[in-house]
Amino acid sequence: MRTLLLGLLLWSLAVQAQEVERFHRALNSGNERALDRWMKREFHRVRKGHQIPTSSGSYTDHDATHDSLVAFLHRQPGVEDATWDKCINKIDLWPGHSTIGMRWHARGRVTERCWTVQEGIPGTVNLWGWRPRVRKTREHLKYKRARVCPGFVQEQRKLCERH
Image (cartoon, rainbow, N blue to C red; front, side, top):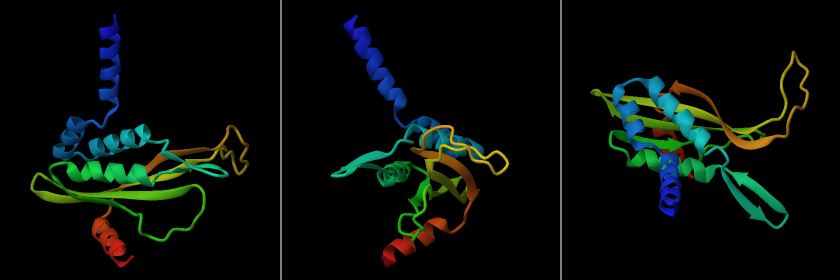
């Protein structure tokens, strides 16, 4: 009974990890929607970020989450480069937005795509201009959109070199 429970626990941990095979299928298929679905699922899996304790409380930081996702993308064969917009100056409004870009080779051509995530979810809904509060705000990542963005990765590399 113990071995079954231990095996089930280890299996569940392996299932929660980043799915390398699924990522490779999506990357090599040439279907950008499959890659978008993989990224959306990955953002949902790591949506809670990292809690950073301070003397007056704690706050959620998503920089380490973005860095780990970009590091995973760098290690994959076929991916030429990946980065996110950490070096760009952004307005400090809540909820913030970040963009992760990746350049890869598939079927003899180079493709570059960006995924935008929102860093925080307000607890209100918009009903024709009226915004009633329906739940508390959450510091989670929310997938917003994907788009083709040629030159994004190179531009972010240049910005980070200047800082």
